[in-house]
Image (cartoon, rainbow, N blue to C red):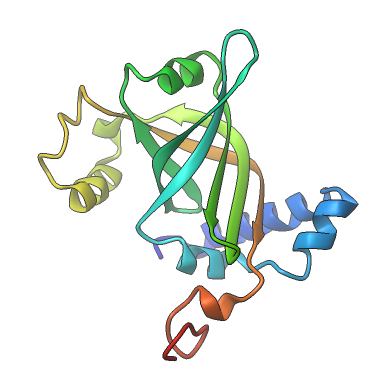
Amino acid sequence: MRETPEELAELQRLLDVSLSGSTAHLKSIVAERTITAEQLARVLTGMCTLALSTVTAKGEPRISAVDGHFLHGVWIFGTAPAAAKARHLAARPAASVAYLRGEELGVFTHGTVATLDMTAEPELLAYLKGFYGDDAFDWANEVVYYRLRPHWMTVYAPDLDKLLPGPAGAGPGA
């Protein structure tokens, strides 16, 4: 977990506001089956395969998968600069992502992406190189990274014990 207390407070505010403004249908599914910002940050570690939704110039939806990393209360993900999703995001930075882990976890986020200048993000670059390997990419030319700034996020997690190892929030063998 890399989130500061301030980032966790902001994430909790976002989760609360998002759920309170949701439809009655969504509330009936999620309200009693959600987790706190701190619990979410503990659950979302390492790489999470995200379903990323973008929109074409004709307004047609497109979905694809990206490696996502939940860091400092927001999603970070990358793709090749020549990918269609990179063109979509450059022209229309609104995006949605979903992270699903069977029926145990669903994290749904809508927001706006910003392209990251990795030379201005040494901590993030060090994290990604540590995860993928220093020489996994030509970091300046083969990959572009984005930060998704959420304006809406909700979490479906009916049983925290299945998501976290250890006695405080369990999992098998706790």
